Image 1 (cartoon, rainbow, N blue to C red):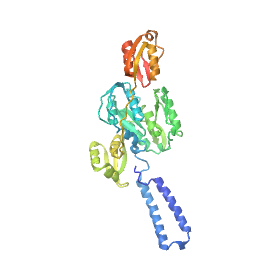
Image 2: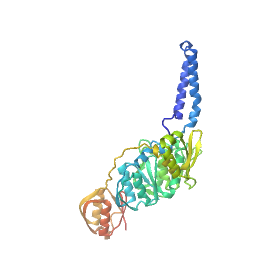
Image 3: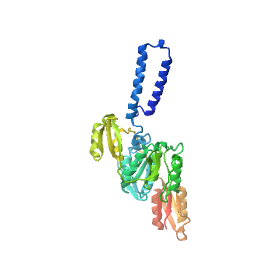
Image 4: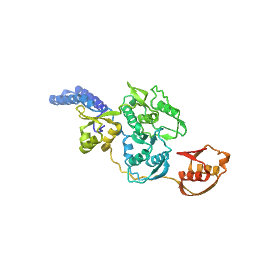
Length: 406
């Protein structure tokens, strides 16, 4: 948790070096050292060695789940400026645009109504505030974890948060393999069960995992190379109310139960008094009255029992500040005339806008409908609305896939 402290691994390495040094001293000719100096060196070595168990005991063996090397950048990007506006755009498309502009993967839970039309007015706010306003319209909240931002149903946040926390600090999670040089992802139209099984083979090859889930088809997605196996597993499984869990050091698939979602962490006196600060500590305690707080002697500090959202709020002052330049979202528009039979216009639009329309060809009573468009930097969604107005044919867009409705 605190990079300035010695870790258990460093202590073991130091101990080995000291033991080797003692061996050299023992073999050296006593005439090279006075008796006092020999005793002093031996005493020093004994003091260092005898202090190791206490240091090892007081040092947390795993880092805070919200302060890992790949969790911090995600929380930093959420503090970036976001003065953007949208007019009647699907939630899914908006999240795609935001993710591309800020270079951050945004995982949307399968239970979220992603085709909901979202309109957002421009405000002076952070990306976190902007996204929270947008997804509030579908009763969802954000969960920033290792290498990814999750959008999940509000009612499921605490239990999904707790599942990720408990998994990430468990011994079993440490046995999971990182994704390696190649990011974990899949193409459009992939079967969810196949994706999850591929993940298991790649990151948990020694675990005997059985996944009983509904049949579902997923659109293209790719996690960062820095995304931990624990965070990827939570994204893949939580939409089915499932998660990986540690059962006596062995990974198992278990239901995510709506039980007590509080988790425990002990913060050192230095973190509370100097890094978080007395004022922020006082304000946090007032804001999270349900949190349980007690003084800890070994290690010295404060033992905090709260939801993961509460812990994440507490450690905000520990996230290093980063300067951001506000990115511009690219909403590509098209200019010029576009006219002819409906199917011809659709196929032309598919090529120019890199869209996939389905099913094609159109029925005979639709394909020959005449359409005439005059475009001036017109976004795709506006073009589709105008085609609907002229032809009566409806469209349902999900990213780059556009379904032609009967």
